[in-house]
Image (tube, rainbow, N blue to C red; front, side, top):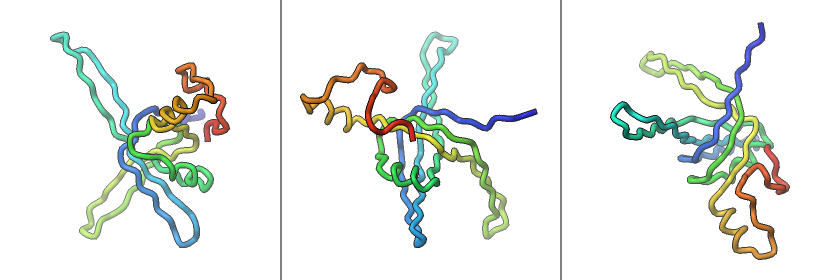
Length: 137
């Protein structure tokens, strides 16, 4: 039987870290916040924020991801990977991260620049109706 390891997230960027290596390779690591809400028994609404560690290691993807900024809203697709290691004290550690293969950024700054430029047509409000030169990467 086949299996699928696929993640799709749309959320807000927290911390962004860009690592440049001597070999010329680049690695971008971001924290991505997603929210989910539910109604409690007493009728009040409860929001829950989940933080995801996302890694952009594919060279062409990492170059473009290096422009992601804190506060950006981004769409990502990728797979879950587990990295395990042993500390100097002998403790075993493990972390889950999303290895990103596709992303799309929807920034507030880009939206302001677009509305300030009268020559560009206004957006329909649906980010997937965008005909820009940057499709999903």
